[in-house]
Length: 492
Ligand code: BG6
Image (cartoon, rainbow, N blue to C red):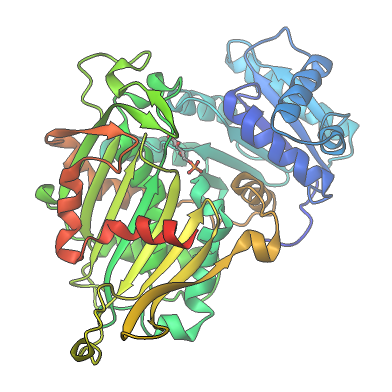
């Protein structure tokens, strides 16, 4: 959301050779640099390995940028004298002090005299506390300029561990310094939710329990586990997708208009939504785990056969549930959410289904209005939205048909920036609007932790399906709400 050129700074990535850094962070920085949006920013990759040096790191990063599809100009924009490497060894107090000395030397050498620094912890969560402590003890949690700390989810694995992590973070850093990344917030279509709702009076006046029958949020993936068993098993869909990404989407859909468009005002409204959520009824939660099946024409194995997954694992790879936001605007409107791996398609959508007309004028003429109007916001792929409305089909007999009025980002604007590009630029510009506040983390875990404590049964579903059939039962009273997938296919 920020526009200005960032101030000169150092951007330090802990885990500088890791998967996230190579696939997302460094490509995002290279694109920004090539587009001259990065300002005078020097990037320092940090890992334990002391055998690397600036040159070998630049070579490795250039290969990663190539693999990520960046062109030569973009690769060159980053892999020059602005990219550095530092091996921190075992990470002792002296090692952190040596890092501090290296940063100061780089700042002097490159005229970055304001001492603005971002520390990005692209590390496994267990390394967060020790790294924050190491930085603080070496005096690196403050500088003459600004110091920002970026952390990646998961922010804890339940309410107690999230609180403990926040406590450690706040021991060394002020909340204003902390940027918790939920990459969904960096997606253009997610940001567009706010514009869509608050720049168009038409929708805002209908955005309530009087007009909306239900809201459904789906984040489905056709991919399976890949090589991530070590992270995913024991975590599952509720922690991996629902507690963070989907809950963020829900709060943006349900929140009241903020008093202004700044980070604090928006967070305040999002937290109010979380506080209004009713405790979740366990009978309205369906968990599932995929069996083998066919996805995108390929035979794939079941979750329990995936490498690194114990054959007795009860980790859910699918979850669907019905939630309630008990406030003046939303009481009585069901919010359905579902997310899973190895489903029929990769798709992130929000479907807002409006109430039926009070009297169907056309029924007496034999026309059947079998679906209510739906606003479908597609976050990916084919970012955009469509409004599904009834029209008269031409000719006799009198028939109505539901048709979509659509808008696609790609058709109107061409390529849209990847989420990390947006988020990193916001960090550099000190804009916390698209980041997750400690209070949001706490309230979200407060909602879901009771389910984690009593997980309930796990249903089977075939890879390549839309999840366990039991999940359909959640939505059937709402006219087979999940079936909106069909509508989207017709449109394509
Ligand atoms: C990550 C999850 O946060 O989001 C992954 O850990 C998931 O399991 C990914 O695959 C999905 O992100 P996207 O942007 O591809 O929808």
